[in-house]
Amino acid sequence: MKNIIVSSEFDNNVSKEHFVDSSDLPAVLVVTPYSNEESDIALYSRNLIKIINEKFINLISVQVCALEIGNKKHLYSNEVKYIINTSLVEEYVKLAININNEEHLKIILLQYELVLFIAQEKAFIQFLYEVSKPVIIFFHTVLPNPDEELKSKIKNIVDVCESIIVFNNISFEILLNQYDVPGIKIYLYQINNSCTYCFNIENANMHLNQEAGSAISYLMKRLAF
Image (cartoon, rainbow, N blue to C red):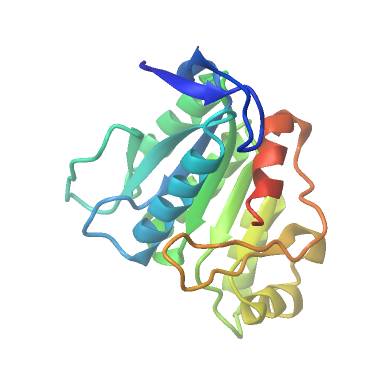
C-alpha cells in the first residue's frame, strides 16, 4: 500500500509532517452501494468518505464494501476493498470472516435501506451478529406505522448494532415512539445543502464500544463541525 503524508497534530495547525504506511492506521469500513449508477445513498457515502479523508488523514484510513443487488457487476475505485452481492448468503459469511480477521479495522459504518438486504434478511441479521467490530447503521428511510413483522426486523438490527443514525427529527421520533428503540441508541445527524455536507450531532455523546479505539471516537466527535 502507498505511503501517505500525515500531520503530527490532530488539527490544521501542524508543525511538521512525516510519512506513515496507511495500512498501519485504524480503519473505518463503509458498507454502502457505491457505483455511479446507484441511489442517493452512494452519493451520500462518497461525501462522507470525502469528509473523513480530508479531516482525518492523520488518524484513519477508509475502506469500502460495495453492495450489489442481483447479477449486475460494477467497476470501482481503489478504496473499494470488498464487494458483496446482497442476494447471496455465502457472501455475508465470507465478509464477516474477513472483517473479523482484519486487525486494523475498528468500526463499520453501514448504510441501510430495507430494499438493499430484502433478498437475504436473515443472512444480513446473522452477519451483524457474527462481526466482532462495532457497527453504526445509517437509517436513510424510517417507515411510519410499522406492523409487528417490521418492528421485529428493526428490533433485531437495533439490538446488535452500536448506534443508529437518522437524518431528521421525524425519523428520530418514529424510531423512538413507534419502534420502541431506546433513545440512547439513536443519533440525529442533520445535513445542510452545501457541497461539503456539514453534520451536527444533537446527542451529547457517542457511546462507542472500547474496541473502536480513541481515534474512532475522535472521528465521531469531530464529524460535528
